[in-house]
Length: 307
Ligand SMILES: C[S@@+](CC[C@H](N)C(=O)[O-])C[C@H]1O[C@@H](n2cnc3c(N)ncnc32)[C@H](O)[C@@H]1O
Image (cartoon, rainbow, N blue to C red; front, side, top):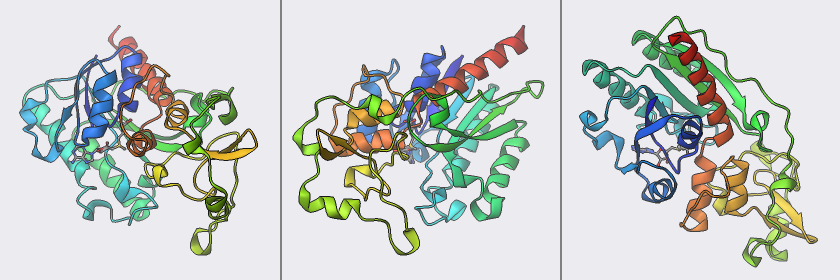
């Protein structure tokens, strides 16, 4: 099945689909550093451009449209402005793409969307209802579920909402079942890392303090299952928000490679960007093993439906 990928980032979501046997025929992101990483690893290079400026006729016909539309407006850390924030309206750009494909006689058979968990509760559920209505109105039957990456083979608590939408209403979809976790954060650590990842005594005190006021959270290091990786972890937050580990009796932050592992990327996955960009890309990514499980389950359903 041919896939067009929107907001492809460094390729977490896309890699899961590729691994499950899909062919990514078109991908796009406007972040040149993310596109650089994507193009080092994926078979078809992504186009670096703002999706709002692209001529939609350039997107080739495809069977599956995938994308985690930017989540800042829906995230608890953002301002919760939903569709009033221009980034929130990128969902409608996705709908324009679907409409354009339909006009050309080739609407995608499946749409897979990913977002942060509070997309479901934002504006008392109205945002999510609206998204569902838009998809239903175009003939798609929508299945949505919150999945935790820790249930799909990686030691990271990461809850994301996935929407799997089928044009064929005969398909009865079920999300892939959760699996028992067999690894811990300690299992994925690199044995020897550069000195720069270790915390100085001076910064340690700040890093180890609890959250305060409205953001109270207990400071904890050496978790067995990592906290959710974030796009801003390059800036170093306190230990109640980021992941810190003890190695040889000293506290350190995770390396970009360890973040890649926590997101299910294989060690063959290359990146040639600064640490700050690498943290951002892996913090933004969809966990590859979650994407793979979803991609595989969709393929099985579609194929058995075609028999
Ligand atoms: C949550 S990340 C996607 C991560 C990706 N799905 C993965 O699994 O690695 C959202 C992406 O949307 C991109 N983006 C945001 N606004 C965009 C726009 N107007 N046009 C193109 N890409 C955009 C960002 O650069 C970012 O890489």
